[in-house]
Length: 386
Image (cartoon, rainbow, N blue to C red; front, side, top):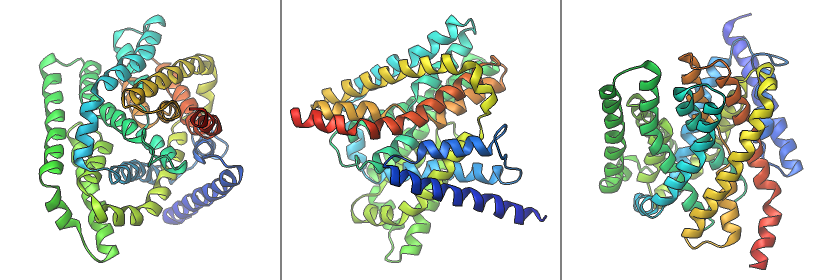
């Protein structure tokens, strides 16, 4: 059969299956993310029906999903709000780093995997999935809540920390000199600083360039600009997600509102593809031997993220219900964590690190959205009592 025909058949079947799963999730009143992840497991290596042709195409769609999720999230806020939020939540960001990197590092050291594996596992347990959290906030209508800017500032703090962490990790994995690592970190920080300065000082010029009364032209300009900045950020060792988020930050007012309305259907399509691809990367057979350890590590991480969210929200003067929502929104792990584990496994740090990270991330990627939905009645009860 022709390659293109097989690609269309496989990708069409995946999208149609996701539509059915999404409908079931709506009927059950839960987030569709866990079902999308299970679908990815079924279609991936070792699954029931592995994809033969379309996996590479789906991987590109997954990257687009993360970019669009963070772009639309950035459109909710402007540059001044971002800087103010980051400044006021810097202490909470440090607490987040210490509380959530420690379990992964301790786990690797206790297992005798060595210091390089400990640094890698610290990153795996530290970073919240910006993509999944953005989807949860949107699905549950939490975008306009008082605690959401606090959650977003922590996500941005984490992404900016990753801009320093990833060059350091890759230097350690490659066994390069301290000078090489310092250069990589400097380039990453310079890139983020330049984009932030452009968004703050020249946002109105960006808006004038992007603005158009025609919806087609507006959509092309916004998506094109986001992909260009995301690609540049990725090339300079900064997360593509950070680049897309900052593009959204640079746009404000009616323009941001119009762009958000145009992007939402596109975002939802590629976000679903992202969650499927995450499942595709995981071999179910490798998860079972480390499932118990991964579950224990996941429980510890849930507690530390709940404490982080509660601390950050309390410092912002938010009530107990908002503190609970903030902590729950930070539970999911996803794209960054898998990337970090992949780098470590590729460098031959330890053969079990990839399976443990995959099982751990899968648990939290699936449970995070479910927890948010299941505890919402409890949160509402807390709010009423308060």
